[in-house]
Image (cartoon, protein in one colour):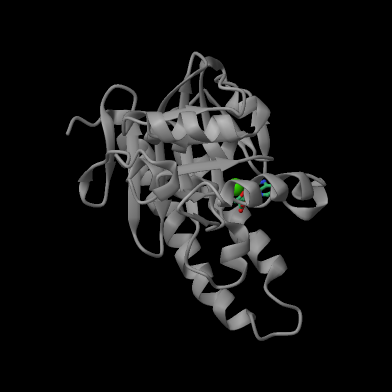
Amino acid sequence: MAQSPAMNVMRAAVEKAGRALRRDFGEVENLQVSKKGPGDFVSQADLKAEKILFEELSEARPGYGFLMEERGVIEGADATHRWIIDPLDGTTNFLHGIPHFAISVALEREGTLVAGVIYNPITDELFFAERGQGAYGPSGRLRVAARDRLSEAIISSGMPYKESGKRPEWQDKIIALSNDVGDIRTFGSAALDLAFVAAGRVDGYLETGLGAWDLAAGIVLVREAGGLVSDHTNRQRMLDEGNIVAGNETVHGDLLKKL
Ligand code: 2AM
Ligand code: CA
């Protein structure tokens, strides 16, 4: 498989940040039983991972801009390139000692998403894709699932945080949808949900109330695995709207009709 220098940089950065998260995850398991709980510790782990990614990527590509979950926007001297980073996607899982979370890093060039990497440091599963080059996972080339009957499809989703106030309306949609699909999963990491769509492990994914950093890398993966991705009105405004539908052509279309 052809791999660009940019992809090498991204992989090295997520692997380094992944080592830090892996160490901290071991510690979280001990903190579960303490009265204070692991909350503050997890925020520190999150910030530490983001710092590593920021430093590694800044050093390798001076001048590129950043959009990060914790530090926000950092303008670069090079206005044509931007990293979009979630240092710890699946924070709630991490906090509870559930080994399903990931680092997500995407590269945008002139407003187009051109590369994405999603890495679960606990399972050591790395998913990556570059525009026009295909998507790859732990066992090689990725393809979205071919299953084209919604009634048999496994669909993943998630619940917006309670504080967002978006939960009741979304719950109604998901409950209605549950009658039309094979089954529904809520795994708790948007980035891994998209990687799983790319890998054909789930047939589709839909969610609302997300940040650009939750979605950017996964969008590249699903597209390069032959899937379709859109926002809830079938436009390409996922990063701005914070909502998404993904799947193969049939599942994507059928899910859109249900929204
Ligand atoms: P996080 O772990 O980085 O917060 C859980 O459904 C998934 O949605 C996770 O990927 C979580 O990312 C993400 N998420 C981000 N913002 C969210 C929000 N406002 N409500 C619910 N989930 C959110
Ligand atoms: Ca996230």
